[in-house]
Amino acid sequence: MADTSSCLSLPYILPSQAQKHVTHNEALRILDVLTQLGVLTDDQSVPPTAPVEGDRHIVGDAATDAWAGHDGAIALLENGLWQYFDPKPGWRAYVIGRESMVVYDGTDWIDLDSDELQDIATFGLGMETLPTTPFAAKLNSALWTALYQADGGTGSVLSTLNKETSLDDAGLIFQKDFNTRALLGLFGSDNIRLSTSADGVDFRDGLVIDAGTGVVEQPNLPRFKAMTNFDNYTSADVWTTIAINAAEFNDQSVLDAGSNQFIAPVAGTYTFGATLTFKQNASDKARLSARLLLNGTDVIAGSLGEITGAHVSEQTTLQIQTMALLAPGDTVELQGLLRGFDGYFMADQTSFWGFKVG
Image 1 (cartoon, helix red, strand yellow):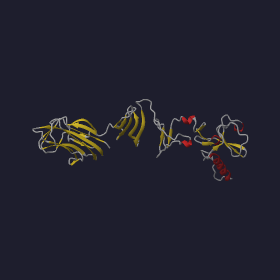
Image 2 (cartoon, rainbow, N blue to C red; image 1 turned 30 degrees about the vertical axis):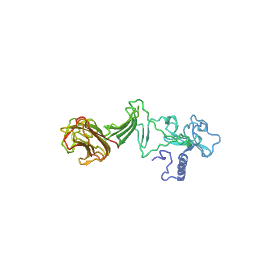
Image 3 (cartoon, rainbow, N blue to C red; image 1 turned 90 degrees about the horizontal axis):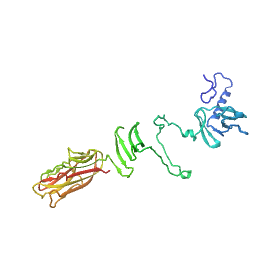
Image 4 (cartoon, rainbow, N blue to C red; image 1 turned 180 degrees about the horizontal axis):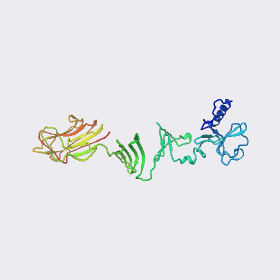
């Protein structure tokens, strides 16, 4: 069994030891010196000419006189004599004379604002770092606050992410259990991107802001524009679902050409519109009507329209437009009606469109 502790070399009281109070007091003396360590100086190589009992110093380099041979040690004046304590890596001390903190790295005492600490290769706070992430912190919250003007600052606080070329990345990565779920920043270009992923592999841009113009794009916004590519025959006085089967664009595949329906992928507010062009069969006297139907049963408020005047075949058009609050899976379809006489809704001139607005 060792006679002293491994870190501070505190003497142990041994079995059957005489004058145990001497050993105990020596341990207290060492603790009194080394805990809450504050020293007067750390850059003197010569002992002060008029030291005071209890003064502590970190001996400077190339020490002389009574301090000779004790470079870097902690020197304590006790009972008129200098006592020395050799530091161990990680010990810290407050240098009263210049109001600075220093730390011992195993060889030298280093200022906490020294060049060596300004160029640390890795820094882990609550966790170990990895070669690809030289700075890592494991914590529940963090705060960045500006240095106020009253404290000598500007009152502002800025964080800067800098990249080398336009093709490089600069941004924030959001993860779940270290699996990426979202990106925000300049990824692969100088455009601002907000991108999400359900699996950490397939990413979809929800928002892109062009670096040159500032124009905002929503690449995956649910939206479509389509038309019918054949004349849709409609019997007199029968609401008929128009076969909207030729899409100009159909983001998120929201328009199902098989059922001729828009299918809401997510909840939200949507805008819809349609243009219907009349084409006569035997008569041009039919009244032209249109509506949007929700889930195959309910007429969407504001979507019902009708033209009652005389029609010109292949020229008379009816336009409708409205908004609807939809739940995921809700369907919207375009219907037309020719009142009194049959006829057609004209190919390539009858269209249906919509998109999510909120």
